[in-house]
Length: 377
Ligand SMILES: [Zn+2]
Image (cartoon, rainbow, N blue to C red):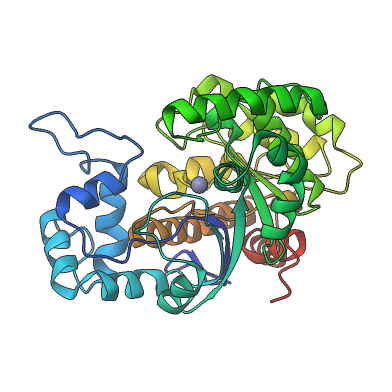
């Protein structure tokens, strides 16, 4: 497993949370805009890629495209344009050693491929995660308020029949400061009426009402599939303090006996909070996707924090990549390097045998995801 000379872990990965790669050619500005969670250009005279992620692209991606490690960014972008986006994506995705991608198909970005195209480009298996709020918004646009309330749970269940999980972005649309209980039918109908009135005026069914978000979340719980929850850092619209997963304590208590698992995604900077929840609640899991690429040289700190308190059976690998194949390549290489370094530390300081390290790495890289999502690879 662990080759000390290169300090990497060579195991297939299950990337249990990601969003797909833009297949079209990218201008340098489009590349930069996909290389940050900010929605705005950098201040004049500065470069948003002069960043930890920029260093990571130069370190890990430049060699995949045939350049020296740490080749200058301009050279890297020129090389990427030269070989074309399709070939760059193919090389970078295949460099990750990922066997399965669990793809969140809920983002409204027509540039992203569906699961089939992703599978071909990456030469891997792709399974779908259905985003609850996207299904709700799509269904509402062709329904009435009463029809939505009556039929949304079965609509979601039907939409998720071939999926391996569902996902909620309640953290970004409202926050985790929501009551733990399922909302009453009367509450949901009132909220749906108001939602449909607003949509008539604005032409948008973007869902932000906490009662409707809770209704969606509980409909997701009813599918019996693992429920992914974005937490912490992730989108530009997040109010960070409201996306702290420790606010979900009451929800986890209320759902402990329902046979449904909750997957806490990203978690940064609430990694320790997520780890505690994953230790306390048998149905709660965590990953540190997203920061595995955006933290660049510091990602190892987050990967280590994720390993501090939760049982090893509760920690998963994900990249949370969106748009750029570089996200996938950096996350995988960074995880492999950082996790190997951690395991080497544990072995060298007498905390684990080499067999322990191999077993723990396999759990986090693949086994836990295979078990929770029933992937049967
Ligand atoms: Zn994500």
